Amino acid sequence: MKSSAKLILLHPSLHKQAGSGAGASHRIWVLVVFSFFASAFALAVITTRETISTSATATASSAAPKSPLPKPIFDALLHYAAATTANSSTASRMSSGELSSISAVLRRCSAPCNFLVFGLTHETLLWNSLNHNGRTVFVDESAYFVAKTEEKHPEIEAYDVQFTTKVSDLYGLLEHSKQQIRNECRPVQNLLFSDCKLAINDLPNHIYEVGWDVILVDGPRGFFPSAPGRMPAIYTAGVLARSKRGGGDETHVFVHEIDREAERVSSEEFLCSENLEESVGSLGHFVVEKMDVNSFEFCSNSSSLSPSSYTDD
Image 1 (spheres, rainbow, N blue to C red):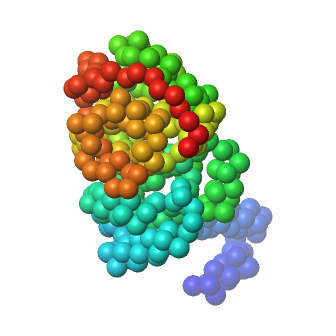
Image 2 (spheres, rainbow, N blue to C red):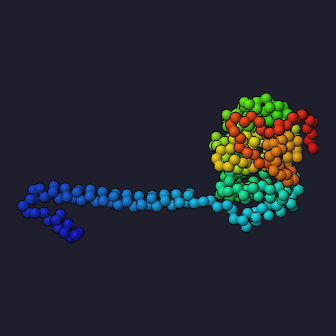
Image 3 (cartoon, rainbow, N blue to C red):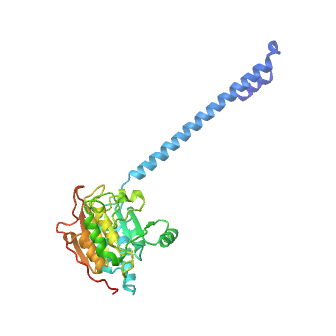
């Protein structure tokens, strides 16, 4: 074929010498254009096949069920975390029993599990690992600590919150919530638009759209009167649980250091004694059910709180 083409182009007919150049040129351009479109068509077919193949692979991957962390790995992580805690003199770290209580719920939680944690602590990496293939989000009072944690561990999703509350204002804040229980401080609402003094309303919008299965309150600081206290985190956990979106009608809420006054009283007010599943060490485990939008009581038996002096012990 190639030798015939060259003969035609280089040896034009003697009867058409005058127009032979134009005719040859025309045939060359036709051949070039035809070759261009043929190449383009072939490239398009190849690209389309690759795209379809890649898309199919991605779809299959996303459609595949997400499996939880294998039990031996889960148990190993928990074992070494408990051993580290046992050898530590830091009081704020969780005990082996407290770690086991939370991990047991995470293990039962069908993947993917949505886990919200207030406080970046010694256990942060453990929680993120145990909730394998689930979504774990951390909220902390320190923007610096959040930035450093994400820089060192890019897999961690964390946000900082500026708290305006104080532990010393505990009973004033509770009184405000009672006065606004049918308005800004109601138990079922979108916290993003709430002006309740106890509501955490400045997280990214998408955080309020998640149906949280497990919530752990282990921050912010609450061991001295001018500390922010965990009242807003406990109130927010109670509202998120009662306003839960997505699958499941229950939310497991854990409150660490519940033996302190602010944590104990706030938990009784917003998580409720009737919802207390168990107490392990200084950890309270509540199971809070989703409520109707027209509900205006956190607990079936509202507590009558009276202020008491708060000390630094």
